[in-house]
Amino acid sequence: MDPHPDLDLELAALAAQEGLPAPLVSRLLRHPAARRRAALLRRDLTGEQIETILALGSARSLAANRWIPAPVRARLAEHPEPAVRYAVAAGAADSPPGLLARLAADPEPLVRSFLTMNEHLSADLVARLAADPDPGVRTWLPRHCRDVPEDVRRALFTDPEPDVRRAALVRWAPPPDLLPALLADPPTRVAAARHSAPTPELARDPDPQVRGAVAAHPDLPAALRDLLAWDRDVLVRNEVAHRADVPPALRERLVPTLVTEDPAEAFLLAHRDHACPAPAPAPAPAPAPLTVEQAEALLVRAGL
Image (cartoon, rainbow, N blue to C red; front, side, top):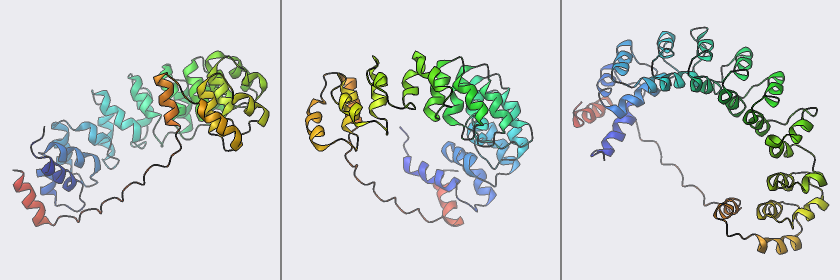
């Protein structure tokens, strides 16, 4: 356990304070928590300070700093530790030009996966990641990439890997011409049912997850709603019970049936509890920035 947690927190806060004289920042880099915070957040790091951060092992924090010079970012994109390259891939702008294309060719699949989170991707790079040889990268793309062209979405909906197709269905509604095949395919039937018009066939599907998707559909007809209210699966009945269009008399009959001896089902039932959480406490006001004299005194107290 750290013997000086408050002091560590004070030093870390000081490391992010704007306007600190460079000599004070350099002294803060000798403290691990302060060094990581400065590496991550400071806009004014000098070349010497950057080299100190790298020499002391905080390259990963530095790699996530959007303000570092382009040549430093390029160095970090070649770092031998994959975790450092993850950080570059997730947030770096394409500076120097071609940096993101280099990361899209990184031999470590997780680097390419983290690249799917990057908001600076061109349409060409999005398409390249959608065709990545590693299915994990292709699965990350619909989960994290905000702007995916329609032709790339179609490629993901028809990907040979079920996990990729499911991830695409969670993120987007499929084109109407692809929906029948996705519904007919067992690995994607549940996810596709959420985008399909409710039908009696789906409401009687042998898979309770499909019936649950139907029960939660916003356009569920009353007749199918009333049928699913007495479904043999408690989680399907629970979906019906939480619908806004359930008549009060039906809800009163339904709620007492929402009991189970299965711990996993009990957890999921509790998770759907609609009780309003207690309001979060108001955040404490941010402390006033330290003066140079106060910062100096803190560094002396920490032995820096």
